Image (cartoon, rainbow, N blue to C red; front, top):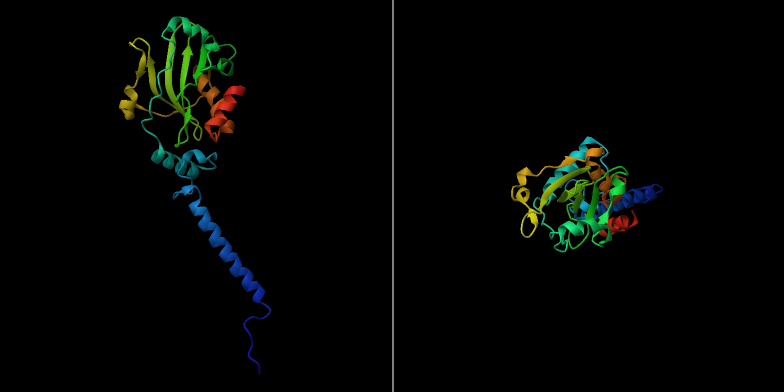
Length: 226
């Protein structure tokens, strides 16, 4: 009697199974190293994660990751240059290449004017996924409000880091909050008239479809188009 070979008619199925195991092993190894992913399965560079939370567990994982990666004390941008003549030049910001008037995106009925300051490092998309920007608001009564803020698209929240002190000589940032990070709090973006400008910034420029922008260049293109 001839000895039976183990490579009988079922051998192709065995080879298929082994090939499948090898493929899955190689795929998982490559996936684990992609984008330097951490234990949550997300990229360590938070700006690369754009998914909207599918459930509460996902939300908590993303929140934990952000708390680890968040830049607690971001560098202040340079104080905007209004050419040392504040009262007059505030009236001509529409003609400045460094200020973007987005008032119409806030409301067609508001009597205030809303501007993004675009010079130097005033607008940026940092590695923790937060869009940080300088906002200038001119009220209907001539009041001037300058602030350095951040918007986190993943959770639709905003934060205030510093305000402008126009009475100082020369005018400068009031950075008391940054000196004491415990006073910094993320707040939900509310699409209501009292702070509609945060929703306008998120919807039109920073967070398309409520997810993070891919790059700062993408944000600047949307600012130019809107």
